Picture 1 (cartoon, one colour):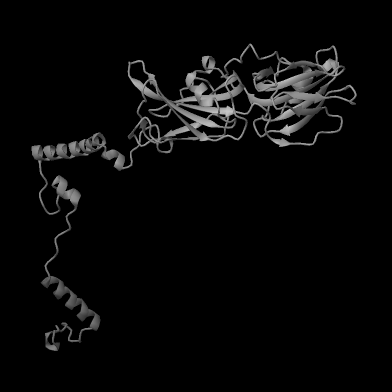
Picture 2 (cartoon, helix red, strand yellow; picture 1 turned 90 degrees about the vertical axis):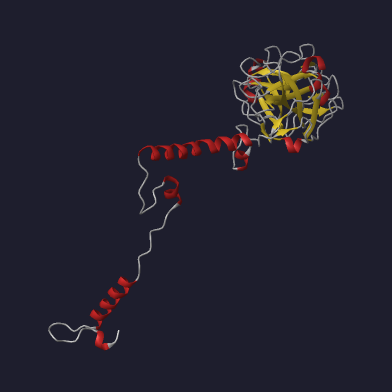
Length: 378
């Protein structure tokens, strides 16, 4: 704008710079056409573009129905085609949902976690196809370092079963596992477990995959986790107090108790000579144990279940020797305890020495011990 184009106010005074800028902006705005508003994708989808008439009546209803059907149908198609897994979906069992061959390598089929002897947790990496009816696939997932088990030996096994479809625990006991304490025999534990445990080292964890028939006549995979638990105390050796009977272990798994030069006890004493790392025994527990009772006067063995071919037994803490029940409370599983009991804390006839290896706590799911080789509790 040239100087002669500036309007002059009616009063004859020159206009201020501020007023001139306002006039320039007004003229520039009038010369520039306005931009149409931006159209969004959602507006295009339902025909509600700004500046346009929206569809009315039947047309609007039809368009809305089409949009709703698309929203519902697309996820269904994706899930049936398998694309749902690509988008992050996963089956309830925690696996990928992919079908896995019956003999797939154990590392690509599943993982088992949890401390040996506790209820394990199983995580599937897919749905396991069932093996042939007479086939059992066996894998050692934890290699033990204890003694090697032979047929007919006393064993302590913790057994849990799982579905090969969704990984659910199907053991059927409150603890999710069952204990077997007896002599290893295919007629008792079953051929598959017997074959897996023979020549295994104590401290091993073994996984078996087998085929079982469902109620509908189809077959599915069952996964069995077997922990081969130690049948003697395992833990830290401690120096016993003076006057504690000595214990010596022979190659056949039996023990001898030394009482020479020791005075008969007049009160109960307890010495933990090997301290385990398991759960603590309570006054109401039933425990699986090795034990021996020795007469103090003549050193004769009154009862024992030590020895590789002998089955571990049980001790009911509510129905055993008074001194034994008191001395075992709070002792950790895996411990060896030596007790010196006067007659009134034993069976009332004479003082005795008792050695106990605490192997496990029964948690409501135990198989009976082999009656032919399990002596009465001390």
